[in-house]
Length: 150
Image (tube, rainbow, N blue to C red; front, side, top):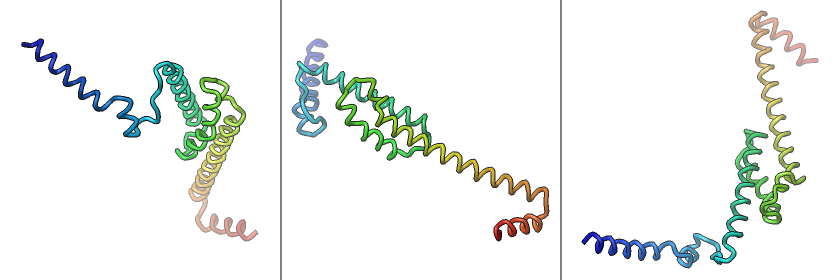
């Protein structure tokens, strides 16, 4: 009895899976762009995986270079590098390509400029706070007025 029941479940499960996960059904539902022929599937998926790994590596570099970069800034770098990923799938040189390095340099420069601005604002606030603690508000106000009028 158990064997017959197992066989019936196996048939039902196979038919159910066939209705949903066949390449033709997935293509019609636009879950995939194309059906990859078996003869080129290893090459195709190796190329796609390598490209994805390169993209993830580039995203990690961008996070390290500029932790405050927005998602749109990161996407812009990825989109610009996408042509290189397609032209040289699997090539480690993509990550050291001059165009990619220029964009990474720009991201780093933007981060440094933001940090310098932030630190100078913090330093200025700290300096004013120190002046107010050690001198009267009138003296600080008078000194600032003279500086601003000059």
